[in-house]
Image 1: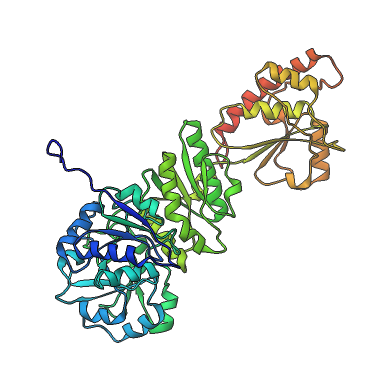
Image 2: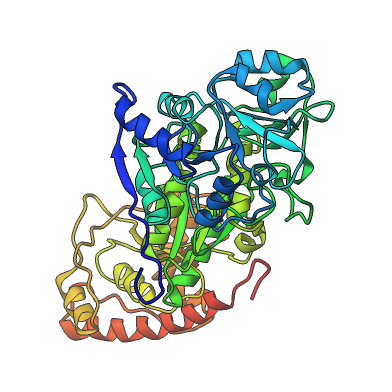
Length: 516
């Protein structure tokens, strides 16, 4: 102690291999728990912060280390089924079948507690939450500690749960005696919680054990309607269900709609933040990652196997904290199977902040602008580059195409020289032939002259979005073709294009879905 301030505790970190468990390390960790200390350890779900579940003072230390509200109950972890009868009473008959199918595993069941369990562990409730983890390190530790270990997630309360020992160290270093480092966890989301004190049993927190899986074993189960609802004022029977939980430092918003709508809406939100100089994070998947153009994009997994999303969710939220993003936008996931658990955790992390994608998407009439010329080597590329340098309220994919492109060619050297004089460049441009796939509902096609427009209209259907540039702007200024002429002709073309593009920017910025 120095100047009346207590020195921080030194947290011991011990590596432990699940395939070759070091009994000396387990014995040391068990002794710490028996003496009322705290040990973080891996389970198949997330890392838990272990304490002696039958020691009221140890429970107080758990709440203090986490900064956790004391009315938030702790789960008691056991290593054999016989231990359940010591801490629970009036155990319903369905328990045996559930334990046979899902223990050890990611299922927590709530029972009436015995007198052996202190109220400090149960958050003042007359019920106790019990789980038998499948992780071998966890079970060895529980036995070494006396058979009853309370273990909420080993993180600062409210933060994303830890799926590696490093996550635990970030939050609790200096606050607990030991961390057992068993590597990354398997599932990545906390256990399913099933209340066995009501009929039919009720799911209070979704997890890897789904309602369908439970019903195949014991018949009907109910689901707490507040799982994906607003914050509750009631004292929670299940851990993590009352308070904003699993949350990153930045504000998280879930964007809801069809997957296409969600991607388009998040793109626009990220682009708007980019214009304001803000850094935003985006939670994407294998299927959508490539479609985002602004923001810090994190691939959370594949929708074809949502277990990958569950496993990566908390790690991704913590990565955003390290990147110091100012806001995070997430796609939504199907509320079925483990997707139900993913959405539950996302909603808690977001503080139930959700926005509809459709109204954001509907604000934008066009999403792509194509400038059409003959060879796609001078006027079209110049116009596209000019538009890319404008302050556009909405995000657009901006391209140029040519009607007469036999093979890819670079931009005209004189056009490039003029663009460089305006602090822009066509370096890297390669001409591309106009094709039917360019004719999309949300694509605005702007030809350099009437002949090009007429050719497209005569050859394709659904050409309502095809205009000449000056026709679209209701401007009589013709765009000269400088091809084969001196550099000054390219300069004159540039000056005309620049004025027209400024007008185009104003018109695009004025657009909504319904008009101008």
